[in-house]
Amino acid sequence: MKLSILDQSPIRIGQEPQHALVESVELAKAADRLGYTRYWMSEHHDLKGLASSAPEVMLSYIGAQTKRIRLGSGAVLLPYYKPYKVAEVYNTLSTMLPGRIDVGLGRAPGGGTDVMTTLSDNFLQQAFNMPALVEELLHFLQYKERVDTTTLKAAPLPLVPPVPWILGTSKKSALLAAKYGMPYAFGQFMSAKDPGEVLHEYRMNFQPHQAQHHPKALLTVSVICAETDEKAKELALSAIAWNIQSERGENKAGLLPIREAKEYIDKLKDSQVKAEIEKKILIGSPRTIKHKLKSMQDAYQVDEFMIVTFIPSLEERLQSYTLLANEIINKKTS
Image 1 (cartoon, rainbow, N blue to C red):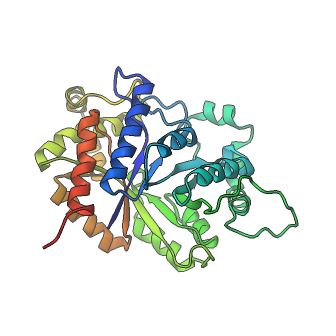
Image 2: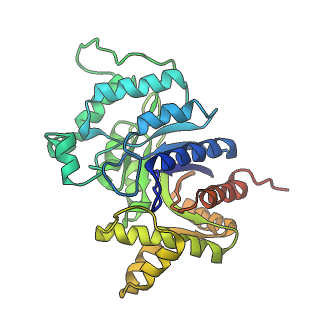
């Protein structure tokens, strides 16, 4: 079982965005040491509590301070951008960091209506044209031959091209990945849909590609890990409060500390909301989390999980990832 990390650069209450980004660098360096397969950074715009608006900038900085871990976007919100420029950026990263760059692609707006209209004059139309945008980008990433006769290149051309992924939570995104023979990442942490049905569609419709002969999929899951199940449940309160606030549009300043998160949750009159959120998060000790991931691995036939961990304390967030790595990645068997 492979483990990877999706980082959204969460900002704690009272914390400056700079500190959140510095903590992202520390997380990536730790992931590199611990044996995680990938570190991806998400792209969000004007969302209170998240500092990850320009992952491509951070990836170059992180790449200079890590040695082997794959780095990528989770995801480039392609309807906002020209595929040619995206290819130039990630080809440059791959030229500097050969064999280490992924390009995760998504069609979500990553922010509110104001973001959509400010970043793009025609976001909805471009989102509708997502398949054409993907096909054009694949050409410039040297992943797919183009049918026309253009000789335009997205220089610099790396010796090892970046690997494009489709990220999504629907059959539509899965079928798009399958059509072009691309790896697929299902965002279970942000979806109530059954991954099994979506991944089945992906595998059944996958068209082999010279760079990807077989379907390859991972699941992105929310995880809170601590030494004991009880401690993990306590640490999870901030993530639970964050999710509830997000659904209600109440995220104003960032991640709540544990005590304040507990007070916020205790004041909720509808306990069912908390229960529904808890279902989306894997909470427990290393052994508990390993058992849960193994069950999901058997059910969905994936060999890689991308972990999202929302804990206000950097020390405890790093410990969560360390405990998982020691239990799953680096544990020696007799």
